[in-house]
Length: 284
Image (cartoon, rainbow, N blue to C red; front, top):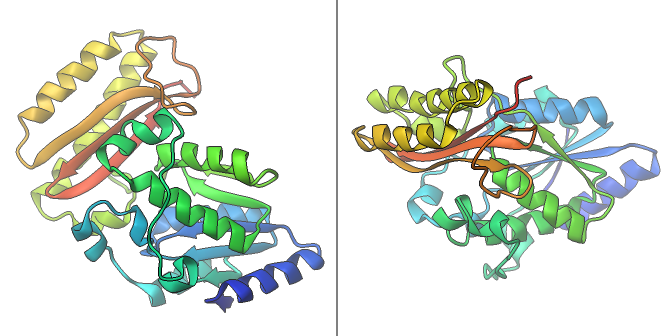
């Protein structure tokens, strides 16, 4: 597995790959790789001969300094996971290589995609996401980029970025991966301890209730309000939002029937750890 730390090296590596006729897939990550990331890499490897995985903890997308300071750094393990999953190239630049010492990022306005839900709760987050993904896309110059549907709103934002600035780059959304008890896989899960780990399962349970109600033509809006009331009574759980949206536009969906773009979304602080989750409402 080839390891690159500079833009010059990754560009020359990709040019050589394309010259030899290889299709290049790209999986951007912030490290702390888990089976969910491995799934993305495996899907990229099925579709592409050259698979680039970036490992870069992006400082500009954290609106909470403590979250940045406590983000797990596990590079040696990450390299093993990436290689075993099918990565052929790892791009692990230093922050100055991408930002050149200037961490100021331009504001991004994609309407509801960047102003609602995650955009409202994490002010400036998507400014940082778009800034770093733009830099990574420009450096790697892949044919396809693979992102997990767990970060559903981020996926929609990145699709918009690609449509406007990287025409021809295929953005592939990959299914959310869960742990055996249903908790959505996240690098932050290692920070859940004791009762918080159990409390975190409420997010998936709420989503399942919404999906069942939608499938049975139930009153989804009343259920959302009931869940908000339940969450308010839970110690250690601070619900930030729970709603039903169109996954492409992030416009709220007030009633059915719910097609393939309708998703239930949730975000909550559980034991001081911020978690997000989602599920499609259309029956498979």
